[in-house]
Length: 255
Image (cartoon, rainbow, N blue to C red; front, side):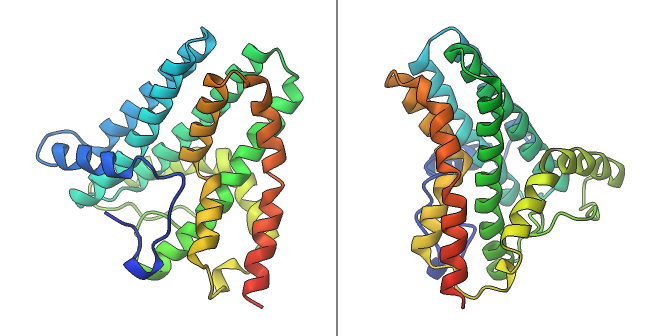
């Protein structure tokens, strides 16, 4: 189920698991499984992947990273199929990704015996990359399909939707803001007029989708199985420079 109308769909390099995710969601639509259950499943897969990474089982790590990406898409698909949008589920998904990303980078730092400063710099780069991708993507989703849970600016607590408690939404929003608030502010500051932009060509969105979490996890897995784990941290630090390139391209297109 695409999040955009056909004319605005683009090749999403981070969303390779969507077809399988949709199959899983359709299988679960008439069961008692909820999107939260699927989110908990991808958290489990992420932790298993990190465990195998620490013990040097890199092909198994790649498998669980890909499975995590698939399930990460499946929870949203299940919410759409069951028509059960939830701010709680949306925040839980993002918060889980934040801590799994941090643990993954720390695991890479551990197995490569690298410098913790550069590991944390790579983590910050990962977060900024993902924030830019989500910023542009959510602008399009809000503009063309009326997305009810993903907001362009997460600057206030949303009103609870049917089936969730406002107290729970408040709590998860606070955690989300702690995790992502500084990265959101940086990206908004770098491209504050993006929401006014009329042109987000599909080729640009495809390029920016290389900042998506699914693509990031794929790259980590490939670096591991190819025996070049020492370059993972350097790669993500260096690739973060493309943030400025993509922003400049978008701004140039909308002059």
